Image (cartoon, rainbow, N blue to C red; front, side, top):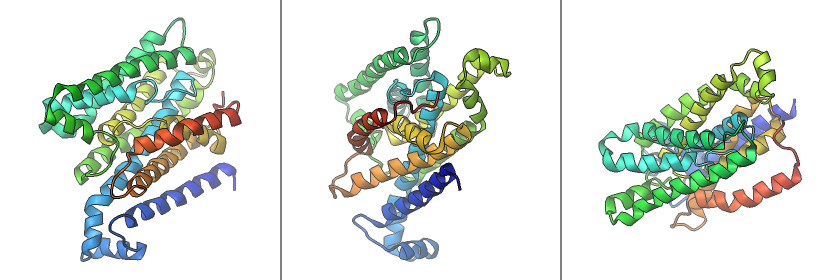
Length: 327
């Protein structure tokens, strides 16, 4: 068995184990068999509480992690930069700002929140592209412009807190990366939009592979480079936007996971995209479970856990592997 497929199987096993551990640990503790039996019988009160409170956050954590990781893979393919990530270049913060604005003005249309987030992410992505373009794109220019765009949208988002509105403050708390109090309605939105984005990403894998070549080489092989970049960017923004709208702002997932994935499964996007989805899901679910249990009954947001482990781990990866992007 190849290293790539072995890595895939191990991540699947770890993800199932993490989901079981997350479901059975906390203030209400049940065994794995008791949990499975209770879900089918519907008579165990403890299991019913877990079903209503814990299962939605587990499913959302899994889909948010998968969406952010795959978004990172797609953005790195399009921008040819190993540092391209929705959280770094402002797409997530752009999506977050428009989510806040939309839910403040139109709370009755909550189901359309990902659409508002997508528009915000698309605006941020367009700004990064247009301001970075100078007879081509260079990774360092993309990152510098992205950091500036990210800072601008982050500042706009934080300014909501200083309007003195209790409603806006509570909305801002609701859109941070604490997955507590997520409902099956949130699950429905995240699974619907997240699944569409992940399926589209898998369908675009061959274009992602061709974009790793020089533009002229890709064009000679029959690829419309501009069209491919645009469509892949749209899917990447969609995934990051829905993850931000439902799960809040979480950094480093789209940076760390693609790096690790390339080391384990190589640079072929046919394997890279599904592996990144599984590994991203495992990472965010583990971060959420750790944040929920480490200081119980208080909770540490998954975004803080990711920031604490993400920065040092990324430095370690970059030092350990001089060329991790596969180009």
